Image (cartoon, rainbow over all chains, first blue to last red; front, side, top):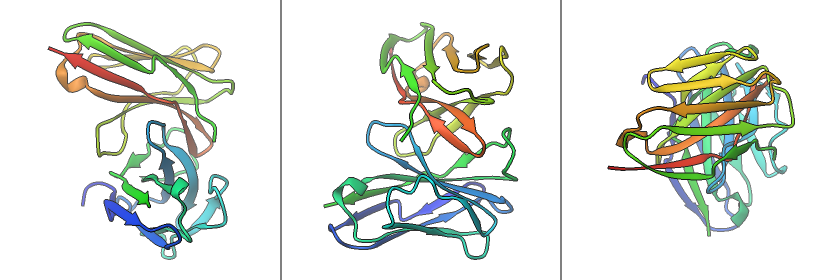
Length: 116
Length: 109
């Protein structure tokens, strides 16, 4: 596809369940980003990959959050033992090169996670 | 987490009116960006600003990068119904984007 795709688009989980969110970046894009967007707020940075290397995970809110990009393409954000405060939209973005301020980040449609 | 101060929080305007919104930060950024987000979608880049003092236009949109590098504004002229949505500013710090709190725009015919 032409853009960033994410799946599932919607996920309902019971508190305590583990969830896995998938991101397919634009083909050939080196950098991949995850953001969390709470209701009524702007997106907040979670983590960043350049190829398969996770260069920044300073935004991950707890050790229940884990992200990987083993082959430098598709990425998975995993949340273990979900809590109600994890309910949010999880956005993935990719950019062609990364490491450069002027590189545009293209966003996917997001996965809406609701933890009951 | 850190979010930039964006105002106004919401605007209700009539079609054809001009709109202005701004964003301030306590930190300096080298790049300011303005995004629009429609319901159920991710943010889409509208305008990017790379130099302090820079004024950039994209159709009916005009944005400026503040001279102090701590603020930016976005103007929309002659608003139309499809301008409805949430507008976010973002400052770029190394690779990560720091977003504002958003301005929700409603346009009435």
